[in-house]
Image (cartoon, rainbow over all chains, first blue to last red; front, side):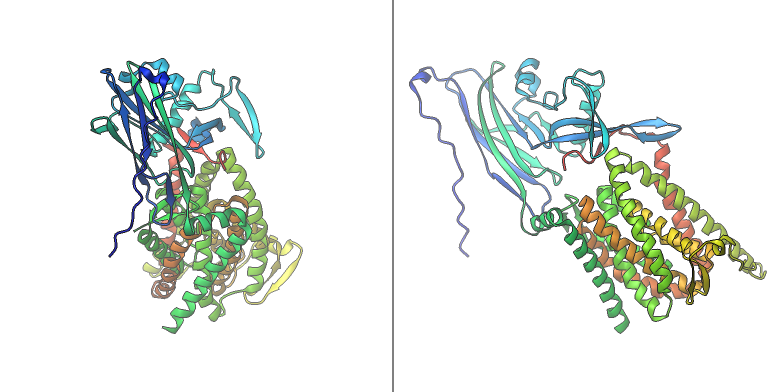
Amino acid sequence: MIPPVLPPPVIEAPAPPTPEAAAPGAFVAAALTETQVEVDSGFAGASIVLYGAVFNPGDTPADVVVVVRGPDRPVRLVRKVRIAGLWLNSRPVLFEGAPGFYMTASTRPLGEITDFGTLRRLGVGVDHLRIDAPEEAATITRYGVRDVVVSRLGEDYLDWRRAVIRLRENADLYDTVPDGVSFVDDGLFRAEVVLPTEAPIGTYEAEVWLFQDGEAVSVRRRSLTVEKVGIERAIFDFAHEQPWWYGLLSVLLAGLTGWGASVWFRRT
Amino acid sequence: MDIYLPIAEMSVNAPLLIVLGAVVGFISGLFGIGGGFLMAPVLVFLGVPPAVAVASQANHVVASSASSVLAYTAKRGVDYRMGGIMALGGAIGAVAGVELFRLLRLLGQADLVVSLSYLIFLGAIGALMLHESLNTILRRRRGEPPARRQTRRPLWLYGLPLRMRFPRSGLYISALPPLGLGVCAGILSAIMGVGGGFILVPAMLYILRMKASVVVGTSLFQIIITTAITTVLQAGRNQTVDIVLASLLLFGGVIGAQYGARASGRFRADELRAVMGLLVLLVGLQMGLGLFIRPDEMFAFAPGAGQ
């Protein structure tokens, strides 16, 4: 058996020192073990390792924060309301966009690394991730259904926003790992990105921030794609591109199976 | 052994689904019903999105009904004329039902309507069947003669226009009541993912008073056509049919249906009806009572945003 030839791990060469960087600040480099996650019939989630290096010439301790965002999609939510003793769904509320996947991993809890304002400005942490809402509440009609679009300034915006995060956290789609970044050697760190089976298909952005004294001093961005491959891809595309033929084929398959089983059983 | 479902976008345990298909198929063959009303709650419990569960199991119903209808054809137990008229109604109902379901999903009210339909239809029919069959069993136990079957059909069956002869069912009635029954079954097929056998069989027995020997076969024939149309419509309109999920279910389903059909000969009809009534009643209560319990999570995602 000849062992398969593996490509050497991609290591980002440190940027060549420039004259401006005469007093070089700390900076960070990072890469992912996989940049493409393939969803096939055996897909049961994926675990990807992000690793990188901190170049820190000074003595100031540095913290690393890894943020991974999945593709943005609109979100519709309903709230249970009690009417005449029955628990019913309210009219749907629409957010214009929320990441389909969001995780942060860091060397320490985010609150210890930097202050609230910085996290909010950078959009780091589930409490600060951007869930789009306009400034004014409105109703829009989509597919013949009137949705409420909540306002960013409205009273219950926070409730709805927290609900999106909680529901996604329960599905393992949003995650906060305060000790998810660990140093394996001097300046060399790793973090694990766990994608559940329900992780949406699309392009993911990974940001690696380096903090010193509560200030973001360096950032690296990497991207990764999650896509269906093989038979799963073929079925998904078939079902969406030629839905009527797909339906006919499904029925035909079912009818033939039933007929075949009946014939086969009568013989035996 | 987990397998990824491309449309439901989740992974499930394949042997578990095959066993589930087989159990539901067995029940379906035993009672001569599609068995869809049992499948949907279990699939939803396993985490399959309700819309995908309802659409994919309609496909499973096609297979298990096709598997058992052939056995009835051999026994001349299918009234094709009656079945054809009900299937025509079923097609109309399915088109309306799929559109209705689409709108309800977008409104976020699909769960409510599904739960209420289960509670009302299954609850009422289960209770009636249980009551009727227990009475019959009690009378037999006491040695009393069976209650005289009321052979007179409701008069309005004859008052309506478009009268037709149905020689196999022994009927000469208007085509409108069977057509209307078909429409109801078609709407239910789209909303609950069921074939509608649990409504059709009692209605054919107690309202139309068809010959008992052709009731089950005819209802199965009608169910195949209605659920086949529903599957195509759900796939074409909502893209919610998961062929991998459906294949797993129907693989076990067709085998189970055959054993079920064989086993049905060993039991008394009234005892079978009592068990089925109890089953229908329990499923209906289980699905419907959730509406009265304060939910743990006050929010839920509604579909229709990102697609």
